[in-house]
Length: 149
Image (tube, rainbow, N blue to C red; front, side, top):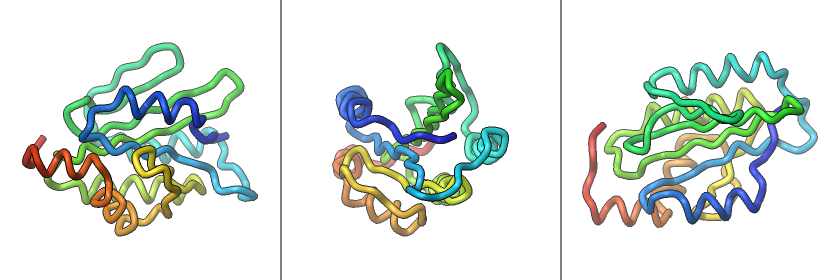
């Protein structure tokens, strides 16, 4: 079962993430039937497929690097799953990652919580891109210039 990131974790992420990162926590829709863990794994596989390297430790699996987009998945001992996607606002073309992220969130019956904006977002690429453009991560990245990974 997918669970929402805790408020305390969200605050900690604000401190730890680089200023050009835009974090989105998968938040289950209230009152919607939960997706089985095996189905969740299949859906997440599609999202992380192109991110390259991954590392794991103590129940965490991180796909991607700090230089680009990444997805963090945590499997709790009770079988609950926590998913956080990190967009690197410096990356020039994020359309495919944002699209796949939204498809994944929809398949898991989730909304996306923006840590930067403290706002729930519909899992729709246009909504996510618009939120990214309103974020402090976007302003920092714009001042730095685009980076292609």
